[in-house]
Image 1 (tube, one colour):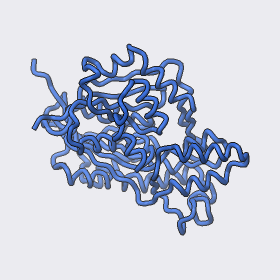
Image 2: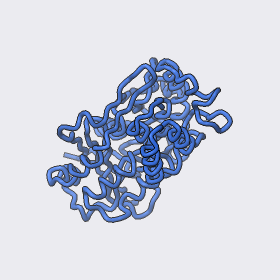
Image 3: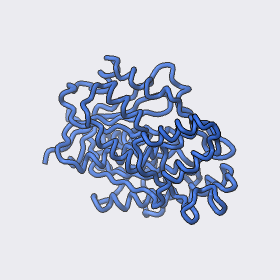
Length: 355
C-alpha cells in the first residue's frame, strides 16, 4: 500500500503596525499599588525575553490605550470588542495570506482551515476570508477557542484532508487579536499573563506536492490534573485569561517522563532531531521545554527569536516559528509542539524535503 503524505509547502506571518509592549509595561506599572509587587512586575518584564508586541489598536498620540480617546478609556464590553474583531481579524488574516502568496502559488485552493480563539462572529471569519478571496465554493473548517495549540489542530486537519484527497490544496490560517482582551486589574498574575500576548496572523499551504516540510507522527497528550492551570473564559468585558505560574514547572516535569518523551520522538532518536518549533508562549515556557527535554543551548533559538520580535500571538505563533525554520538552512528533522488549555500538548514531526 502506497503511503499518502502531506507537506507544508510554504508559511508566512504578519503582525499589525502598532508596537504596544512598552506602552503596556508603563500602564501596568501604574496599576500596581504595592511597591514590592510593582518592583517584581518590572523585573519580570525585563526578563520576559520580549522586545515587541503588536496590536490592531492604535494608541492615540502614542499614549496607552486607556487614555482619553483610546479603545480602553471606557473599558468596552464584549460586544464592542467583538465588533472590532469582526473588522480587524479578517484584514490581518488576508495580510498573512498575501504574504504567503509571495512564496507559493495559491491558485486552485480547494479547502480553507482557519483557527482563532480571540473572537466570534457569524458569518464566520472563515466565510469572510473566503468571500474576500473569491473562494466561496471551497470547503471550510473553523477551529475555534482551542487556544495556543490551535495552529497544530488546523495543520493536522489540513494533513488529514490532503492524505484523503491527493488533489487537495489546503490554505491554513491562524489569526489572533489577543490585545482586544486587555483587562483592568491590579492582580500581578493577570498582568504578567497579559504581558505576554500580542496580535498576529500566520498562513500556510498544505498539499501533496513534495515541497517544504513533510508532516508526520502527529501527537496529542493531555497532562494529568492540570485543567485549572490555563483558563480562557468569556466575561462582560472581553475574554478573561487565567495563566497559572505553575504551568512551566508542570510542563518541565511532564517532559522529563520517559513515556511523554516517547510520544514526542515517536520512532526518532533524540540525536536525529536537529530543530524544534516550540510555541513561544513565554520565556519560562521555553526554558521549561529546554530543561525538561535536556536540549542543548540554542535549540529553541527560532522560538526565542519570534518571542522577542512578536510576543505570544496565541495560535498564530507556531506558524511564525515554522516559517522561521523553513527559511533557515540546515533544518532537517524537527518536532513542532504547542501547549494550551487542558493542559495539553499538541504537535507533529516535520522533515525538509530533499531538493
